[in-house]
Length: 456
Ligand code: IFM
Image (tube, rainbow, N blue to C red; front, side, top):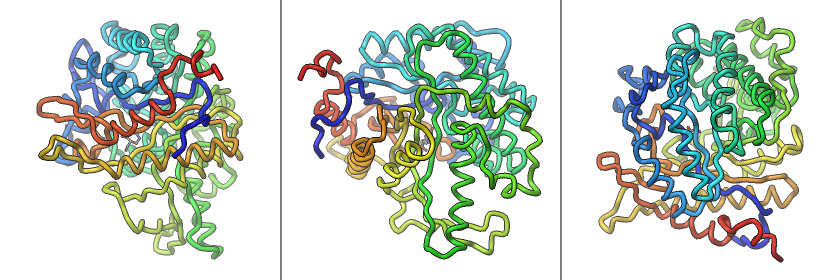
């Protein structure tokens, strides 16, 4: 792959993580419990009963972890703030020790010339807010806006990139419809209500940051899938359209167009009448952004499935499924970037996540030979670059993930990292993918000062 001259100066080459997946220290320095603390301790909820209690112990090891980011050669790092570290009960009294942790982290990044990108909500709702209804309760959107303001007032002078939410699809549907994620609810009306309140929280959070004079760029990250019909048959085309509504348009349309899709009410007929949408909500959700984050993992071919009277679609099973049961299809990333740019927005786009889970292990030579992940990164960078060369305004790329971590319902069983984490000793060992990415980052000059990059 040719790296020459392709990327604009200031292109963000990063790595991504999230608080509950790496921090551990769940009861330290005043942190309150989140829905993931509760859920992961529920018998049967997570593979082998794993929890994030210790995770990668990043709360104590953050300095050496930041040194690894320098070794890797990224110029940016995406992490999330744990709401319940800052506000142990989700609202009310601020826990200064929690804010201070993120202050040290941000300062540590800046000292290392790494640009911080902060996700405000990566699924870890304070349990106290769940106890009064969680995302099914409209007030949670206001609590999020208050929390966003508190974090911004503490870190805003040093954080150039903000993301309100990570993957509201997962919070709403995996958490409230499938029940595989916290809070473990299985109720479709609740899931759609939660979806709306999550998006409302996003809009209100953006408004709060703007009112507070945010100097950084503000965005949101959606996980989008590339959906196509399994054949030209009318029923398959319609099935693909419904799947696309469910996975993509229910999120893209309100955030970037200020409306739910035309077919949403018919799709949810008998489930909800959208009574939760109040006057002005969609304008709030459609608050102007500075950039837009895309997480890409899945490409689907949909066919009609008459056995499912509600959704009426089936996904064609992948020929070569990964351990996550999905296929590796880099072209889907290109398709999604094009779609967002062609159909929805002229905002700069950032790939805020993409990656592959493997059953990595340390071999007798103390190496971790994750050749599939190297192929994954190479091909997805290539696909994103093709979209960029076609004219899509792509300004950053963040592999998921910096290091192995707590992979939600899969616990520690699925590894996504470029650094292997030996959970018993907390040793971090670079995998082959870390070596590959480091050499790629050197080729593209990711850590060269901008002035040097601009010299012809
Ligand atoms: O680990 C998750 C992350 O928290 C959100 N996006 C998908 C990743 C891999 O499943």
